[in-house]
Length: 575
Image (tube, rainbow, N blue to C red):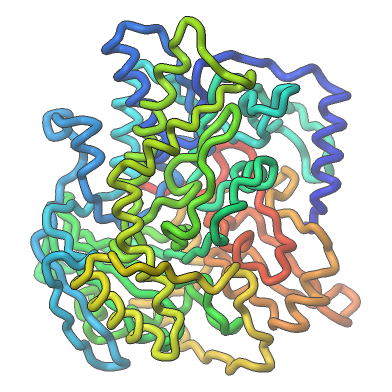
């Protein structure tokens, strides 16, 4: 199952020589990714075109089988960008069914809860926000986009960035489908197609695989810090109606994590016609102990008396996981380049202390659209390159409320890198954010790449996790089954290794194989060689929920995540 990256590139090259050329289509704007940012950009472009009676072709490709099927978030939505995009969102039937009615924040010890007052003005105060199932909200955005004339193509995975001869972005190509594991074409083989545009927007979400290439090609991270990430794991439960409090939000920090591991939990009571709660656990991927398992920390957190009392007697109905950006202001790359732009969680506009990124993602897409529209509809567009370079987008970002918001909270996440860890960070937040509103004249730095933070296993204590009880806590594979994840089995693996020898020689030897713990879907496991001597890394690519954690946290940076065939991956329903 190990599939070297060089062989994958060779296969793609040989298909180009052996089979017909790819079909190419032209649009004014192509958007990669059908999340909040991509759809907001598409909607805003068509709104402007319709207002000014201009012809504008906008095409959006999304790798999930349907819009929203790969979307996972808490989610508590701040409606500011939605109000700007659709002032009449209520009349349009946006699925914001649960206004926040109650905010609880706790520090957990192993057996007890210390309540923390949620004062007005603190980042996690949710007055005026809505608890949503983000997949349903994104699906609704897709419906609004189609009504306006956006062409949406779900089930098509953008696999390659195309370039003009002058180096500017030309568009994207979707991947070939119908390729067997051994690289041979199957009877159903089809070439991917090319979509060319004046401007291409990349809204792939956190740690997009095309954005990774663009960072290098255009040196977009030259003047910013490395991005830092977390992994978020989530479940949906139907609980006893007597325990259901629609509109209640509960957040916690502390147990089961130690003070130097950044993370916390959420538990949101939805009002969707049944006693439904969304709960999850977020852990910063800058953790140092290779024995830590984010999935198993999440499972044991549910046994805390304060959490268990809500879940006991309930039924778990869904599970999923996704990486999220935590770098904030310090880690924002350059977002414009000839022929393209980065929007949403791809560059990383998440407000970490708020635990919210949907409103900033949407606003970034809208700002991109407003910068693009006059350029692509001008009779004599002024562009030095064939693919339009529109630096006005970045200029407008810096004048917007996104920039102001991210700047004000820029020091909260890195302030946790101190001897007192969590508690030092909370003290810093109380003094410098709540009192001074982030106006301190310094900017703290992050610790560096998450992949460089693990300590050798011999320097760390193994973590003994309790066995799941099948009532509150569960094993990994039964959890993945609830994500609806499915991939065509006979295709080249989309989890590629740059060097097949590295996992055993370095990751297993030094770090005790951390990929078998940080993956929330059981994709990676070390198994004995058939000879009985030594171990090998087995990659169960069909389990992958597209969270991107492996590509981020691998201490050897040997794993490269590429897109599988379109429609593969999780099939989330309102996650």
